[in-house]
Image 1 (cartoon, one colour):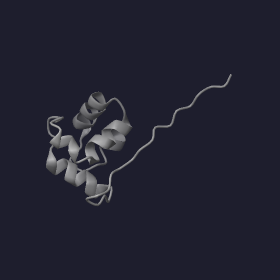
Image 2: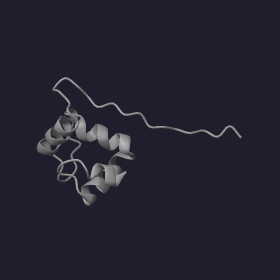
Image 3: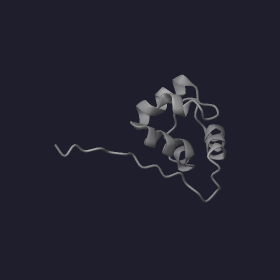
Length: 79
């Protein structure tokens, strides 16, 4: 998960782990990084501000009115 996040501009290993710790999942981290309201709501993580979010949105080719939706896969054993 952290390795995937490190592929996003301005996200290194430490920031990736901070994101995962703060959001609890890769899905949450991706939502935080690509959601403009993350900054407006005051939920700031050190080193992740408007510039990083703008770069992350560009990395995923998101337009101003678009959001990144991610769904976590859950596997349930039927045994």
